[in-house]
Image (tube, rainbow, N blue to C red; front, side, top):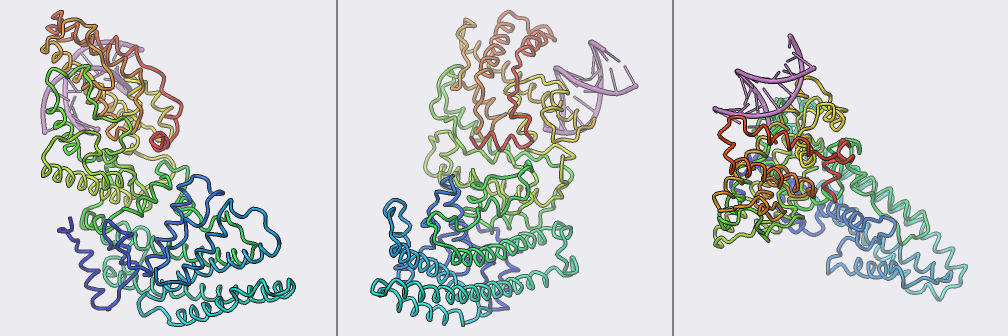
Length: 586
DNA sequence: TGTTAGCCTG
DNA sequence: CAGGCTAACA
């Protein structure tokens, strides 16, 4: 897996050795598949990780207002008693049902505790920064200690004070702490920026010959090295943005009464979405998973030195690999069971084969299509929906294959994400359009060109595009009828006598083959009507062959005539530009 | 004459 | 899946 370490990474490592710098950004880029696990506690990377985690938790509930920030808490180190106690109090405070009726003193106290929890979190972050390379100032650590003492001083005695005292001292402390905290955070942000600058100086020095040191969009796209820079540049922006959020949010938190149900950090969706109307818009979950599971080095490895294809956007991912699993599956089937016989292992909701299609032209290098990635990396080959009867050894091989396929898909995706993308309606047809067309085929085998124009409204139609789209459906039909004939003949060979014995269900091999072709990821629920039409078509072929009509060279035309009348209405959702994403989220 | 379906091939 | 080709059709 790591045998093909990239030149890019070697360069990075070399430069790192020269400068004697361990680098947060590099860690982000370099960390392996268990990205989060490998991060050294309190390294700078944890900041980002925690930010991401907080968002993950937020998104996971699906209801931001009800998110309890507890989920977003940075995990304290065991020896970090300060953080621990603070977190405990914060948790007690944040318990949604435990403390409903509060008198004023209680709320003041809880307010204080809440602030402490917030401080602990910030300190946690600051500590993280303190572990960064030498560019980070040491003053932060001191501040942290001071503040720890301060908190210890004023922890328990509050209840002995009079109400007035409590309020006034409290206000003073709050104002003072708020000020200090703000300063610290801004300082932190500045230091982080310095760190980033250093990182990018390294980058600039390596490819200054290539682009004169400019970080222009065009140059960034011009080769694999620059793609890496593009990625890093984006990361830089994200870091900056994240840090600003931290500062703003914490300052904000300290300026307002405590709100247990506060959303601490903005969701990644807001953070990364370039344009919701863009068909390439990813769900936040996908993006989150991509951060959580993506193996950056692999991705980098794979696109280093690879020319960026711009002209042809249609690259179906590794059909051979997919077919392999399918053929293995077929071999395991009873030869006589090709039609209408159940095969229990295929689960309709399997999410595994997502790599069958590469989502098109994502602009954000981190927006990897990793919904499938995490499943695959977790479940391995068994998640393909097909049961494997192979030996453990070949299981591993198959697992490797799956992993490789996933990575290559990701890398292709990355490559594509770096090709120039025109805003608005696309010039050409993207892989997503192809996927959409395939899904539409489940409803219509013979779409008119006017219908295609209606359903692909995000496409700038011209003669070429229209004929390409028509050609697609022609190809779909071709495959469809070839399968029909094949399975009809097989049924005859298998001794099926009556047409009525031919049933096409979701367990049928015919259906599986078709599903594999038009719905590789198996993430779309195929309409029942498709099964009915397929059954009719299969029976037509069966009858024609049995009757010997296939001696006529044009014997299929009669069948086509029947099938073309059986198109059903394509759901309105297919008119949406990003319907593929919408459909597959269900 | 332009468009499209279908077949064959790579 | 795309390209090339033919035949059918408007």
